Image (cartoon, rainbow, N blue to C red):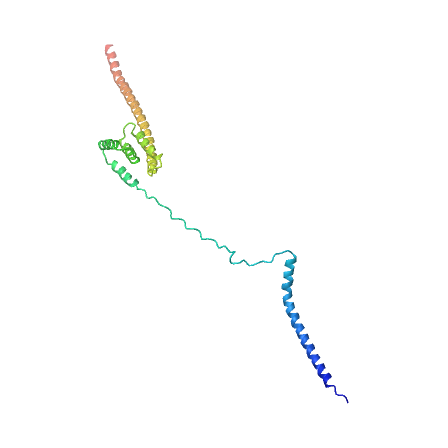
Length: 213
């Protein structure tokens, strides 16, 4: 009877080795299956000529600069001369013709300026002399055509003066028509009185002729 214990041990070692190799192969195949898609994707990109994207380095990143703050706008404060001139315009309405002429003479002796020109125009609005309204509008238009801060007020006063001139001309026409109508009425009245006088004399002549017969 032959004892083959060494052969049995060898067979066992071979079987264990085969199991170990088989397990290692399965582990290697699983790892390869996980890495294979990424490798295939990288190979496809290289073969098609696509460049592999690179992450930008911190040195190549340029951060935008914050815009510089604009300086605050400079405001120019101008003296408000409109309110005093409007108050002056109201004062002129309470003056008599003598006071207005005296004020106009006083303004004529002052140094010419846009303010003085507007004041003279305001006075001429109330003097109501012959040609005063055209003179007033000339004063207003002279200031309105400039870039002075009072140019807007001068334009408003010029428009008011122009409307006042239009009304004055219309009033003059109405006054002339009224005078003409009154003259015609007086003429008709005189004619009527003449006819009445003739009528009063007619019976007296008839009576005198009957007496003569």
